[in-house]
Length: 477
Image (cartoon, rainbow, N blue to C red; front, side, top):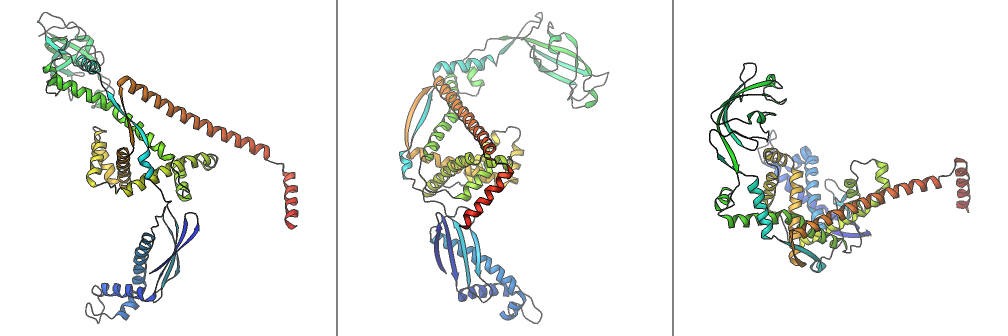
């Protein structure tokens, strides 16, 4: 194989590949030997069919298969040996090919630019550590205790009031007919929350232990048995007990009921929980700082084909006219995205960062946990959409790269309070919103200015003719 590389313009190259006739014949002979044992032709024993016969019968098919293989193998080798990383799919132009001929072709390639990532170690970013005060932890535990009140059973003479817990058995019917779920045992209702049926709770106010009470309520519109929906149901209730709420004592027993070892362990768990609520958002700020710094890196030229592909993504859903009007803005955004992506990818390759199957599955499980109750649907989605899995792999790959950059870059650790964390995040959100509005206004102004300019420069039809004539006259001279 003989390879020559010709620089055309900028990142564009022509890679010319020549493979002599003898080498191509060797490839063909190897293929004929491979198929010989599988061919059954009348008059010949298996594996004994002469090559000339095979050539007459299967020559075109064999050559087509060999050509595909040779092109794939040699083009990959030619690019690798010349250290050319193509930005997108190279264009292949066959010059000479055929049975009993040499092979000559040209790969037109747009090469990825050379990127120096040494300066990554000089990047500076802030890493926030939220210090959770004990008062914040105590406040959160009190809120939990408030939402999990204890109830204490009262005497048979005490009537139930709003906020009390009533335990009851019931039998229900609609026009004398029972239905699915028409019977309940030891049903607990906190009066006033109206969580059972609308208006049901109020009718239980004033009941006492061991009393019976008939309660009437309308079954909801979405009731499973449609024939009973929106109809009045009668509930024969037997009151088992009435319980009054009492203040929850925050102690070791309370902590154990929540799954902690003791109260001290619960405080530690709650402190970590509050920290985690801010951790992800603050880490995103650190990541954005790093990405902004990467945008400042110099890349002499960005491949046009990558810019065009990115603009297609940015302009999805827009008509052709709007895309043209906003192309300059799209180009700016596209170049920033591509530049950042190229730098991250180069850094990842140089540090041999890869995503293994275990890491990918862990990310899928993370996605499942974010959609409780819909785990099967999410899993089916990933199983049926390889592109979604590839996108997820890309996300994990980027996170691994960012984490390594954090290790190598210059970190400025900042310990902040919960209030400071909220202030920083609100400020960041405001800046992001302001920038989005600014970009939107900038885009709108450009469109208005373009329309105004078009109206100013648009000549009348009679003048257009004279301009054309004058232009022709000048060109002749």
